[in-house]
Image (cartoon, rainbow, N blue to C red; front, side, top):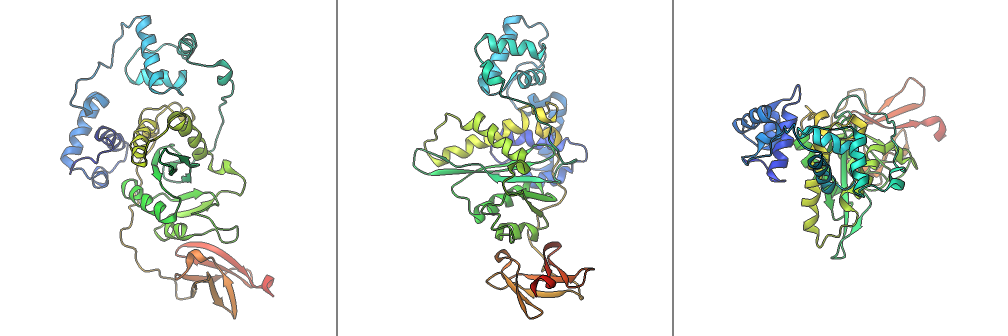
Length: 376
């Protein structure tokens, strides 16, 4: 089957770059991107021979032009700036190097931008580099959130759903949603998991649709994630920096795609977001990862999405209870709340080393702890 159309070129380049990563499983990627192995190996060969220029049938400008004059170099700087008005000198310099153009110092590029009135000196003072913790390998942790909604001319509101890999900053999901319901999120996550595999853990904030209250944070969407083998964590209340990379991406999205842009109708939004995701993952250098592009640091997860789930089973020594419609279980003559998100599911209670204290498990995850001493 052919490459799915995001555009075709964008999907093809993403596939090839992931396929060229060390340890990539080509046939697994072929299944997820729905391309034949013959087609895949053809484009991999062409990419290795000629880079991205080999992925198109059309003629491309030569990658190497060592005798460019000063005005020509300025023209290329301004061309990149015109494509992305929010990109600074460091990003533009890296893009030009990737295109095979002889690159002068970052300060030279910066001076060109100032000379042509492309940078406000006062605005540039506001930007600072921050040192952030990151997980050591791709798919250890994905961050997920809704960016604040924005209005379109039809009167509807768009709620952008974003999912970002913590290690690589690879953006696997940027979807224009008409609502923030759990069913909508699950639909989009299913497509993401089928293409990129499952992460070990996902983190999100405490709001709907993935949070309820501090005692019982699980909702149907987080229960589903646990059910398919993805661990779930929530950010600390009133600490958005826990979701720092996704929050920072939302600022970037606003500046580079949404600011000053009015969409006439909902169907026009997703193509623009698909194209921007391509630019963000494959073209835009990222300062936090040494000016690399996210696709160069990302590898798809080897953990496949389970299309069919086995029954939930616990050990013979576990005390198993089914959660009722109110999110409660009966145990030792008491009604204990474990959360409405688990309604209808079996949970297991296991004693800890401390007398009177029991852990509550759903599948392989500990979801609560009950202290019978405090209930007396």
